[in-house]
Length: 208
Image (cartoon, rainbow, N blue to C red; front, top):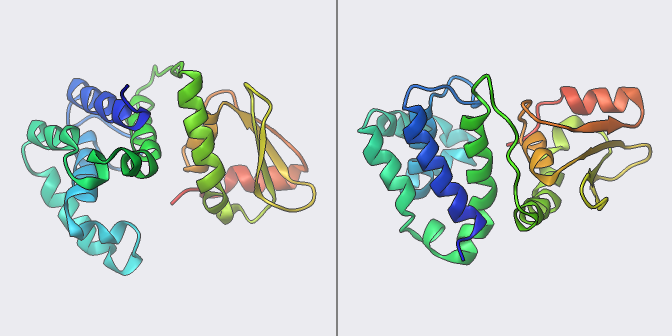
């Protein structure tokens, strides 16, 4: 059975080739070629350290620019292969790549004017819920307010930041993950709680 992380990798690669290297993404000024280059550097180069170590960000940016200048189809093929431990070992792939490839797949999908939310399986939604519970606490920290997330499909809740009178955000795990990763192009999210608290959450620059 193909894992969700591996399936999203394949879907992203297929979509990258279909949209072309110069199509927009939700990642600021990045085109699809830049997003693919980021994934190549992330998995295949020690120069990717700047993704998580701020003083090295410039080094990673230069490496990404060099990768983006290379043959686009070959770079996509390099992403698709996933032969290094980050992508080839199932447990590592699930832990490190599920959110990465889901979010970046949607970065390409939702950059277009006519996107529609996908229908994911219950198992895929469960995988994203686990990611939200593990990673969401750090991702909502910039808002500086208590936050509770609730699944729209099952009613399950998780506290992302404890405190009295939290902002409560309700939606499918897929949409909640995109929200905490800082994407504004979400579908069907509902917010409740003190008005000022909700406003701070919605206006904050969330994500990594």
